[in-house]
Length: 110
Image (cartoon, rainbow, N blue to C red; front, side, top):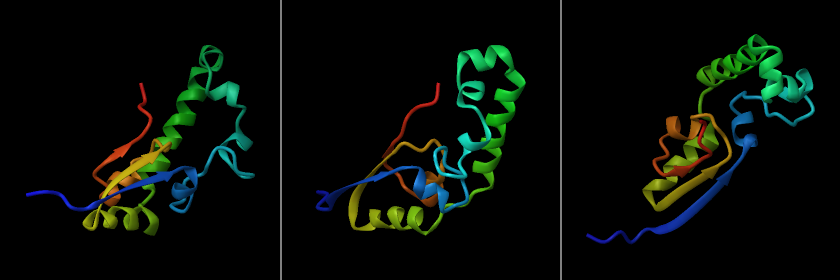
């Protein structure tokens, strides 16, 4: 059987997850307001204080684990009933997946 659904591409960024309680990096109260980016996101920061870097990223993981997909995440996933939806996001959280989105592209973490 042929797939007659129209294609839909959705682009998302940090703002979509902010609605779920995840801080963005650049907002006025964002993560970079409390940390020097070079201290927690550079090879030099890791060499200087690996415990600080680990604590920073472990807290991000805890925040993501506690966060729940919001209405926008869920709404995008529900569009799959009528469209071939591809979500393109810069976000590294898994809220699109937990909301039910099946087809997405995001940056890989290595």
